[in-house]
Image 1 (spheres, one colour):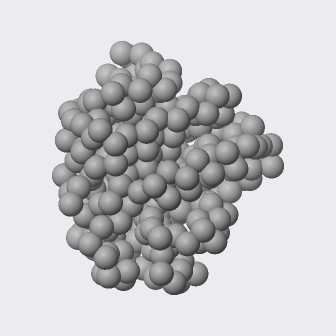
Image 2: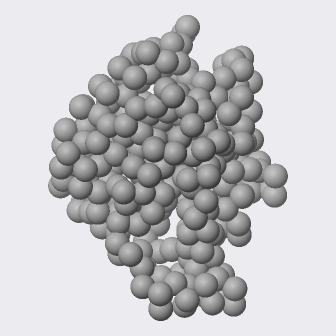
Length: 273
């Protein structure tokens, strides 16, 4: 594994790592989800590497080993700008014009927005439990409080309440999630309002995506909205699009007990693209 730190447009240090294979059949760049970090996908990358796929990943600002206030974002566009820098770097490393993006949860939201604007850099887009909406509706009162705090105290944080048992049926991984010091346990007010605002235009984003897309969703996701994922899929402009819902799975489909089903589905789809 090769790794290094890169500098963003506003001087943040971002942790970046990759595994190269000779004569890759595909090149994948992962965008991880909220509160977590990219090295949680090492086991997935090992399988993909063995199957002839070069893999790249980075920690979002405010996450993992990257700089920034934990779970804070000044504006959602900062995520997209960081991803743009990383994509260009990956293309240069592998000397290819197009790569594949793999976005999980909030990473799926970021990857989708990026794809709608810079599709010429991409071969395809893969989404894993993309965060296009919450599974439980937030009350109007909480939204108002969140909006006020975002303006007056943007870095004000509150516990997310996300536990490992909400993410996977695998008890070992669930316990590891709860104990991991690199997992953010709080969310800031500005992060909340920026992400909610980004989600409002997600169907318009889908209408601008016309490259091959695979969307893998969890049938019993207790964090993100399955209905929002379905609506997004329906509005994707591309005729080459594939939706697979894994019945009984929780949010982290690559960390579920039957994760091999998801990985095999991913590999089969990549082989065709």
